[in-house]
Length: 81
Image 1 (spheres, rainbow, N blue to C red):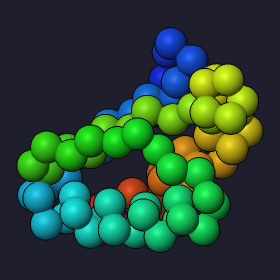
Image 2: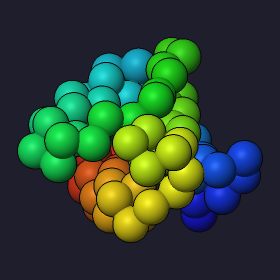
Image 3: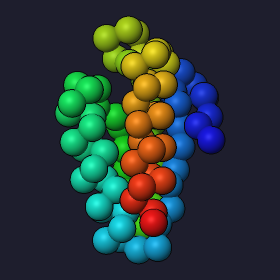
């Protein structure tokens, strides 16, 4: 579940290994380019962490962030199988 904290939507995803985490990131990268809404994210081995907010709206959480979060969740469900 995404958590709203400090004007950001935050969530971490854990995978079985780095290769699976990287495949997830690759799919997310395509989606964020299509949406033209790029997240702050980090990757350490099998864990990918996101912080979403909309910079041009004053660094607050907007509907763009909620749509991206939903898309990321869908990609996660598909990738972890």
